[in-house]
Image 1 (cartoon, rainbow, N blue to C red):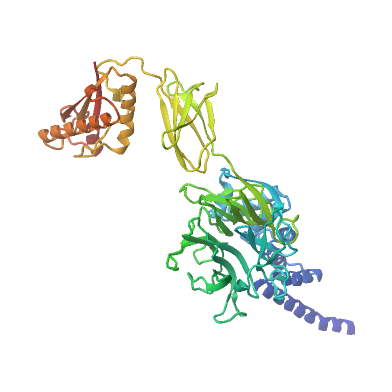
Image 2 (cartoon, rainbow, N blue to C red; image 1 turned 90 degrees about the vertical axis):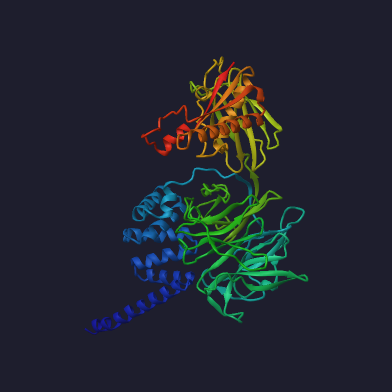
Amino acid sequence: MKKNLLLLFIFPILVFSQQNQIKKAEEKFKDEHYIESIKLFENLIDKGVLTAPIYEKLANANYLNANYVEANKWYTKLYELAPEMETENHYRYAQTLKSVGLFAESKIQLNIFESKRPNEIRTNFNKFDSSGKSMLTFSNIKLLSINSKYSDYGTAIKGDTLVFASARNHVLDNKTFARKAQPYTSLYQSIKMASGEYSTAKLFSKGSYSIYHEASPVFTKDGKTMYYGKNYFLKNSKTNLVNGLFKIYKSVYVNGKWKNKKVVSFNESDSIRIANPALSPDGKYLYFTADFEESYGNSDLFKVALNSDGTFGKTEHLSNKINTEGRETFPFITQDNTLIFASDGHKGLGGLDLFSYDLLDPNALAINLGNTVNSPFDDFALTINSEMNEGFYTSNRPEGMGDDDIYSFDLAIKPILFTGTITDEETNETVPNVSITVLDPQGTVIATMKSDINGSFIFNNFKKDSNYTFKFTKDNYLVAEKKHQLYKKDINETVTIKKEIKQIEAEIDLSNLLDLNIIYFDTDKSLIRQNAKKELDKIVEIMNQYPQIKLEIGSHTDSRESKSYNMNLSQRRADSTLNYLVAKGIEKSRLTAKGYGESQPVINCNGPIKCSNTEYQKNRRSTFIVKR
């Protein structure tokens, strides 16, 4: 009896104690003190408290701290206990399944996520990801010896000096970052030596130092201005943080020392996290990561104009071809305006993956940089030294030295290719041994070759961002010409060539023979339309090929003005066409221009008959009649 009374007395105390432990663990989780919350939740599990909310908090605390293997263990237990878990947990579970090599199981979780959120950007990217390949290729990837057992990440290249963030211990303070149970990060520098190795890392500058986080530096081209991420302090305080948030700070190099110019103020809200600055190649834009109200997900990429007077323009949200409901972070912009960024919202290998996006191409899609640099863990903060064809990025893959580690790589730009197949326009059969001439923008021949026996060809020796002309010639065929701007993408196309016309009879209209698009004119105008010039160039080609023929250029109008007005207008149009052909090198003696006014309509629109605008336009045409 006494034993039962004792149990009745102790049981409420145990329940009350567990509730207090759960409350304390949840408070630590909410405050992002993930290491402490994980220990408290695991202690509850050891005591037999096996509930879905605890599994969920354990899984998410590990996931948000990028401990994907451990997170996978708890997501698995959560899914077994509560398969109808929160939708976002299915996505996170899928990511962690990639980290442990269970790709089929990951796909199952992604399918569940996509069925619950069919309209998400992430769903679209995971179903219909870009099949494009990056022009960047990476090799000779090395784990740098300057890494510590703590977090080292976010490099900036300043001459022969590497500046990066590190949580390694130093003598200026002993504060601990509760989220990871590591010291706060400070900016360090390491100099590249003649051997190619890097010197022992030293604190970069006391002028940018605080007792909390500094990270993600970027320097202007002259090396005298630095933007970097830093914890945000209360006004006039060096110790009291505002919500533990990051802001971007500016520092300038004056008289041999870095002077902090305080926070960059293009958003006044204390609740906004702004970090990871990057500069456009021309220095006119500052790119960054933020969780503004308009963000699609946990963090998005934005940019803001840097005005010459030191003020900022309007903040611009990068498009949903880049940003997703997940995390987009750590932007970097190459010299040819390719955006490199990290994301867990685009289709990847797990965790954060590195992607590229052509900022100059309106039809661009984000391209995964591939498994040479990406892994099933976090890969982020890539920077490139274009002059040295090298770069650096950060990863928390297990084979590193510590938490996050910095890796170096050699960079090569994949040659741009123009490939294709040449076919006969009439038979659609491939045409072998076609001579191909490549001309640069100045008209200089830079290469020649022939298509192979299958009509295929390949060119790969180009300067980036240049316009090239390709001429395709073969006996008994008309010369075909293609113009392309070869920038960042390979081009593959089928080139059709048309057989020569052996004999051109008198009174034949070349418009019909060459299947020209009709040379239309705007109402009441005699100027050659831009789209008509291409068709007239085909007339030039035929006249050069057959120097014996002469042409009568006939011009026709619709019937919506007086006959005398239309006759004069049509003559002006015929003369305008003749002048264009002469300007292209055709002797004027081979050409006559005759205006027919409205006298030879294709569609009769006179009298009571009313025509549509399209029908009227068909009467505003040119003809090219062969004369001997």
